[in-house]
Length: 120
Figure (cartoon, rainbow, N blue to C red):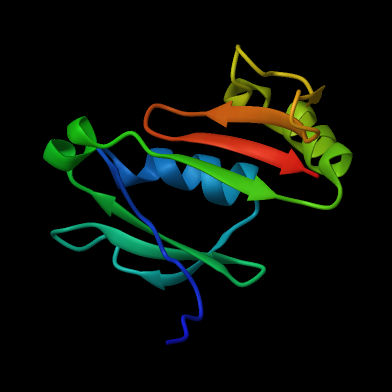
């Protein structure tokens, strides 16, 4: 059995909120766009990663996912986010911190999703 990638589904009350975090802040691009359809949806892509964003208020109330994005240059990511999108820095982990398990991490959040940026 072989898998090529894991593609999470993320539900937002308004999909444009997710676009601000993933596209504007983290640099994902829209690979498939049905944002203006009756059931807004898009596929975001970056560096071989994919995320499906859906606009569905009912499901958004039930799901608040948290993801880890692993990088080899956490300082570069942090510098860009803190300079251009500091509103997404999570108040509980808003600076790069060496964690007890040996990883450097900082965190982001919007109204729906938590993202931990991590470097081992």
